[in-house]
Length: 209
Image (cartoon, rainbow, N blue to C red; front, side, top):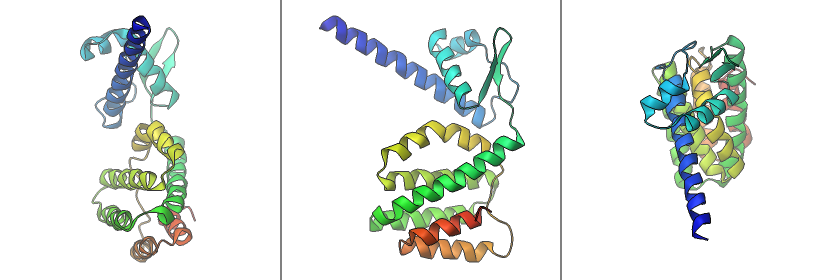
């Protein structure tokens, strides 16, 4: 029994190292410390992180699966380039996914959660740049996922957080004379838990309705 426990503890530690390497490398790609085309050599990365190559290799494989890293066998492992198609697809995914979570979360939210949701929408409205807009959007998304009480939404957010933040860079709401009334409608619809109206307004704000 003690040997089995030691093995389980060892696996947990190894998994934690992979998670740490995955998050560290992913954040470096998202914030631009690692640029598209930069080579990712597991020996160098392992040395920098003070860990073995194995968790680094596993982390790079996970990053490849979500499109942040590209690998050509026996040639290179490098930071993947951003494409217009990836940006467009991610914005469409994000808008519809967040609207869907909103539809589930609003009827279930407590009064305090509704107040916080309105405050997060205000932060979205007031964001002074696209980067801060995306940060505010992810804060709203995370809050709605928590309010949805849905574990599948939570797992999907955990798996897509890095790639969403990277590919949404440059995104914002519509920039015309409909922006202010749409944000005003969204606040009002959230406050009264009008899930259908809030979903439609949110999608319209981002050009998908």
